[in-house]
Length: 251
Image (cartoon, rainbow, N blue to C red; front, side, top):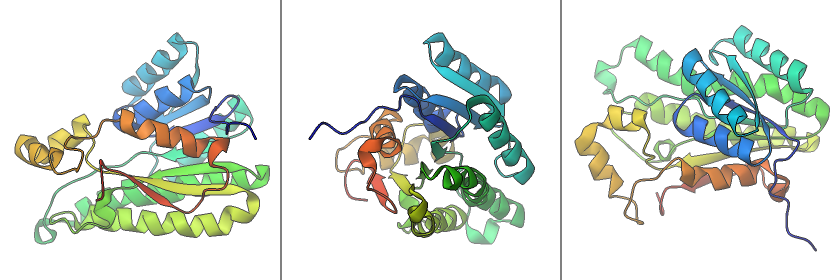
């Protein structure tokens, strides 16, 4: 029996939120592992810069500016990916936003913004890419969840609800699409040192939460890459419907 195949050679991966932060790190890592990468995000300049980084290293990347909360734009992005590469083997739903607001101060716009980007976008992308994968009879979908899906954190009612919904969405899709050899899993990061996380938390809270993990340090985007590549590869061919924490210890 040989070593499992962790390579992404020949695979096509769509990665949302890939203009910065975790999504960008996953896009760069997937390309290095051999995948052709379709980059989807709203910020055009940063998206194109990520694509240029990949192609400069000899990788294949297609930047498709997309608002992943918009059904028509998601459909156009997937159509463009198929026209360019002919198939989609992996979908990484990395786009998301965290905000801190008490429920009494939370207006409807804030609720919709957080729910739409963290949950509706996953529904739209999974539904559209899922049609391709079901027809192919193969595929791996990786959703980016959060420890806030299960932890009780004040001032995160909208974010926690979205991520809890994403976890159950992941499990249900794994059951629905398992017969078509489409796997659906989620990664649940603890605190990861991204620019967005530092801006949202502020210096004091960021420092406090950085020391809370049993390993005694804040996570880096690199800490998610190994698991993401594993879930995208054939090495995880019998793993589906699980939420895997990457948090420096128990959450």
